Image (cartoon, rainbow, N blue to C red; front, side):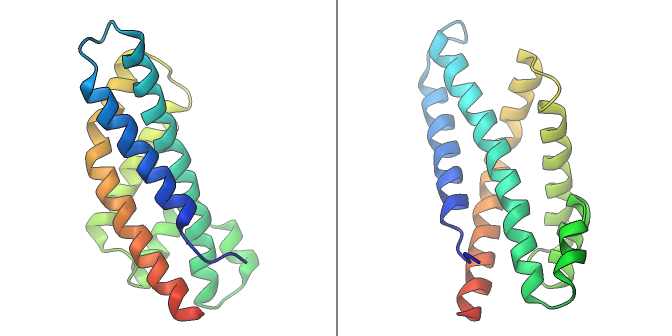
Length: 143
């Protein structure tokens, strides 16, 4: 089992780059605006899914049945992460909101909704990087 967060860090870096480039586009009418906005939303979705997979690996390190961990729904993954000190309660609530947003982006491809998603990305980047650090510390301790 690979116990590192490099892929998650790379998705966060890609998201940061998309946000930075998006901010540099002069007009929302420019095709580059659509390109970087779409890249940011997709990077958000990918990093959120990667986070879920890494949390499953992390929770298996705390014992219990791997089969039970694999059955946990997204919210339960984050509740258990809090129980084990990987996140505080406020962070868990933010992650629930990120997941709710991601579930909507998967079904609503409208420009307005994509632009709403952009508003949460700066906070999300801070949270995903903090969680990556916490997970890497846990994985390093297991080595």
